[in-house]
Length: 454
Image (cartoon, rainbow, N blue to C red; front, side, top):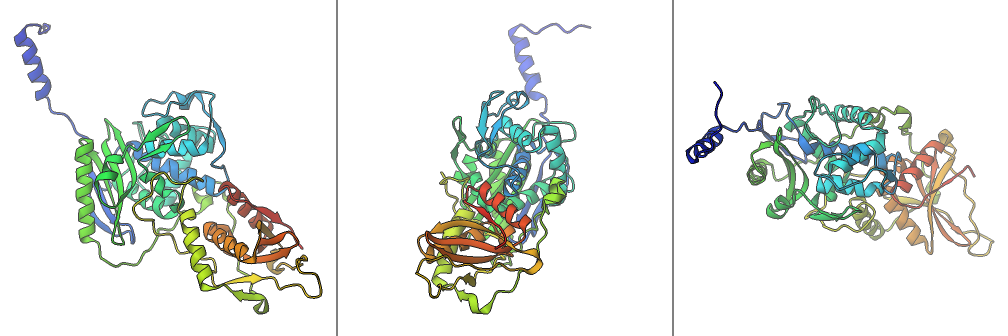
C-alpha cells in the first residue's frame, strides 16, 4: 500500500518524531595514548581496528613531502602546476585553479594547517607524477614506518574503499613526524598561516588554545570516520601523543583527547630515556634505492692540524642552529610552539674542527693550499660560504653540520683563508656524497658549491 505524504500538522509532527527517533549510527571509536619519549603504550582501546582516517591521512602525505625535500627530489620553492584533478577536489580546499602555479611551501602549509584537499592532491602529484603513483608510495612508506594495518587510496583522506588505518598506526606516524622532521613540526601548531593565495586558519586551533602544552598535530572528519584527532602535548619534559577515532563532534572529540592526554601525563614516568623511532631508509620508503647513499668510515684527523673549538663557540652555535633546524619553512614562524621538540642527538663530531695553519713566508691573506683526505676515494668536498673572520666560518660550519647531519656526519670541517676571506668547507667526502649534500642544502635554501680533488 502506498504511503501518503504527511501534510497535515499532525502528520508533520509525526514525521519529526520518526526522524529524530531513528538512531544515528556513530563511527566506531578507537583510541591510543603513548609516551612519545619512549614509545611506551599508556592506554589503548580498539587500537588495531581498521577505520577511516579522514584527514589524518595528510600526516603521511606531508611526511613523504618532507622526505622528498630532505633528499633533494623537490624544493620548497618548486612551482607546482595545479592539475584539473587537484583543482576539482571537494572542500575543505584552498581554492586552487587548474593550470595555476604555486610554490610547494604554500601547498604544504595549506595541507597541514587548513587540511586543504586540493593542496594535498597537488602535493602527491608533484612528488610522484600522479595521485595513483603517490598512493603506492604512501603504502610503501607506511610499511617502512611500521604502520602495518594501513592502506591508502588518495592523498587527502576523503572516504574511499580500502582507504583505512588504525589508531595505533596513526599514533606511530605522529611520533615519526615529531622526531624525523623536527624542522617542520611547529607548522602544526600555527593558529594561522600564509598559504600563498590567502591566510588560512588551523582546523585544530580550538584544541591548541584550550589544552596547556598542546603543540600539534592533525584533525580529520568525514561522515564515515567521525571526528578524528592525533594530538601531542609537552609538560615538564614529558611528551604525550593521544589519538582518537570516531568522535561524535569537535567538542566531544577535543574533550576526549584532553582526558586521554591527562591520563597519559598521570601514567608517564617523570624521567625516561628518550629513544626516538628509527626513520625508514630512504630507498625503502621511496622505492628509489639508487638515491640512498651508503655511509662510510670517517677518516682520522691529523693531530697536528686539529684545534679544539672553544666551549662557548659550541654552545652558541648549537643554540643558534637548533631553532633553524627545528624552525620554519624558510621563513620566520608565525606561531611559536610552547616548547621546542627534542631533536635527535647529532652524530657529527662537535669537539674539534680542522683549522688551516697560517701561511709562512707569504703575505697574510694568501691562499692556503690543503690536500683533502685520500682514504676511500674521498677527494671531494663542499663550500658553504666565505666569511669575514675565522670565527664566523667555524660557526657556520657547525650550524650546517647540525642542520644536515645525514650527509655531513662523515665529513671534516675545514676553514681555509683566501685573499677574499675565510672559506667554510666540508672535505674528505666522496663525489656522490658531496653532490647529495649540496642538493639537500640547496633544497633548504642554503648556499653550497661542490669542490673537486685538489
